[in-house]
Image 1: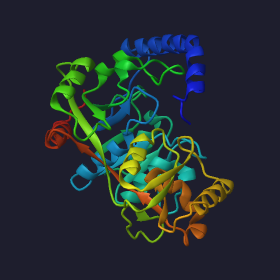
Image 2: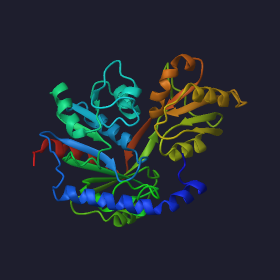
Image 3: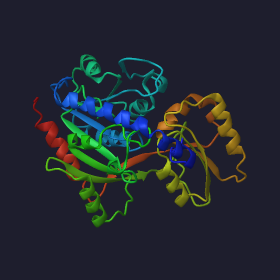
Image 4: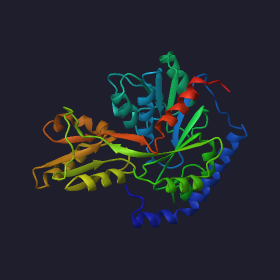
Length: 357
C-alpha cells in the first residue's frame, strides 16, 4: 500500500492527534527504560541488534544477510526475529520442514539462503534467547532482526538504519509519519547506516547528511546502496538477466518497492506492477490474478519478477509455477566510500573483545 498517495496522505495528516498520543506513550516508555524502572537484560555472549526508527523499508533483512555472509564462516551464529505475520506464536526454531507460515517470510529467507546457521523466531526476545541457547548451546553470536525498540534485551552493538530518501530527522510519528520511535533514540545506535543511497552519491552530500544526523563521538556513520543480482527461476534456479528487449510483470509485497521499480525502469523495455501490502500472504485468487495479468502482456519476451522475500510466500504454488517464467531477483548491500572493511572490522572488534557489562 502506498501511504504517500494523495488520499492516504491527507488521511494521515488528519490523524496527527493520534501521532501526538503515540509520541507521549513512546517518550514515557523510553524514560522508564532509561531510568531502569523497566529492566533490560544482557546476555553473556555478543548480541547485535539490527533495527531502525521507522516502520519498515530501510533494508534490515538485507543488512542481516550482509552480517551472516561476513561472519558465518568464522563464528557459530544465530538470527532471532519476531516472525512477523506468521501463523504461529511463541518461540520456534527453523528446521527442514519449516514453512514461511510457521516462522515468517524474512526468517524463512534467511533459513533458505543460509541453511548452515541457526534461525529462530520469538515475539519476546528476552525469553527466546535462553531457549535458543538451550537448543543450540554452541552459539557464539546472536543477530537480532528488527529489535531496536525491543529494549527488554540490551544488545552489545546496535546497528541503526535510516533510509536515504526518508531520513529519521525528516520524519514524524505514526500514523501521520513513519516513525515508531523517538528521533532522539538514535543516540543508542553504535553504527548508523544510511541505506538505499544512489551508488554515485557524492562525498559532499554524504557529509551534509552526517551533519544533519548529528553523529556523536561514540557513533560511526556508513552509507550503503542496493546491488541487484541476476534473477533466477523460483523452481529450477536457472538464471535470466533482465534485458532491454524484455517486458516484466513485477509482483511485490514489500514495504518499499521503489528501488526495484527504478532498476526495472532502467533495465527492461517495459514493466507492469502488481503490488501488495508488506508481508502479504498470497492466496490462490492472488495467484490467478498474477497469471491473468501476465497473460495479458502481448509480447513473448516476458517474465514475472518477484523479490526473495515474496518468493518464500509464493513457493506454495510450486506446482502451478513450473511452466511459468517466475524469476526471483537477489539483492545485496554494498557499503559505499570503500567503508566495507572498516564496517566489518568494527563488528569483529566488538565480537572479539566482548565483555558482559
